[in-house]
Length: 267
Image (cartoon, rainbow, N blue to C red; front, side, top):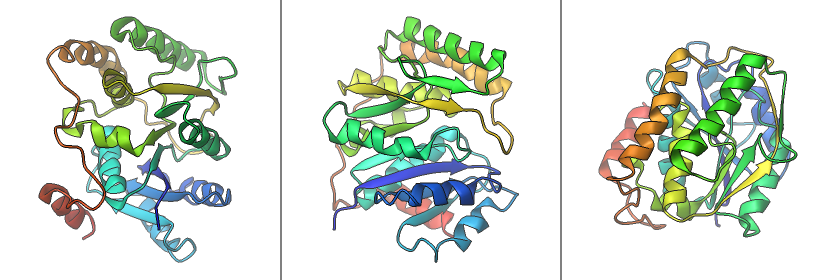
């Protein structure tokens, strides 16, 4: 049986949201599986996920990591896990309902219908918008998007968007070891790498709603990486090839390092 769709949800202290977001995705009844990657949340997020295994058998999976290691490394770990398992469409999504689960199928259809190799849930295309954001967040986000386009020349209106669907072939082609950003600039670098490799990116308008429960992970360090990381991404692209030398294929043995990583995180 072919495994088709899986949603990666990275978490750190999302105990107030995690059960609800899992329920919302599974209630769509569209065949989505979910991989939660928890970075050692002290609030018990991982245990809540474990307690729901019996409710969602063979649909819900958990990878636990020791310590807060960064958004980018969480997603890369998840990408490798999903590729190894054979999923065809791999999604990124936040746990805090800023991304509406009902939009998952719109991203899926954009990719499966041949509109693009990557579908981005975009705030900054016609029909896209944000709700409940303070003016400073609006300024940082819109300014950052424009800044990124000017520096990288990448034709994406919402480069920091974290609601994304990737076709498997995109993630198999990108050399994940060449992705160096670990904060929100990771989202920019992944789209930039895919664009540089010739993959088509399509933007699907969404409404992004600021979290109602829990604490935002935004920080000055993340903003700093966004500013200087974009310059670094463009500069290093002159010397860096984002293409993986040997693309992974279904049935191939996972690298020893990743097998060890999985073993450690399951202890």
